[in-house]
Image (cartoon, rainbow, N blue to C red):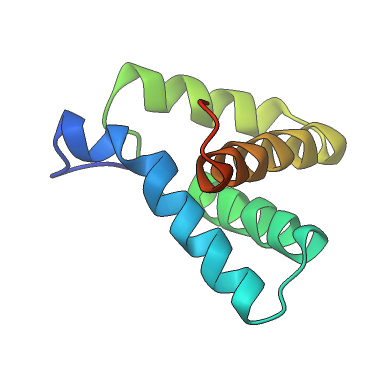
Amino acid sequence: MFKNKTENNVKEFPKELSQVILDGQKHGVGDELMIKGMVSVGNLMGRFVTPDSPEEALMKEMWEIADDNEKNTIAKLVLKMGKEKLSGKNC
């Protein structure tokens, strides 16, 4: 999934995520819609993206066995991580 990305770029994910969240908020996108979008993207990636590392394979396997409630929980945690970065908290 992160093919051609350096480890440093992967570490920047929370910062990039927070910027996407901020952009969504500026356009009136609420948390629930962001969560639904994250779940939809996760489902799409699970179907069409081949993992490039053991960690990505584990995430894909966890996503595949998760029910809708569990996928929503994962998306909520991703949103929380991005929002904490916005507020200056450590993730």
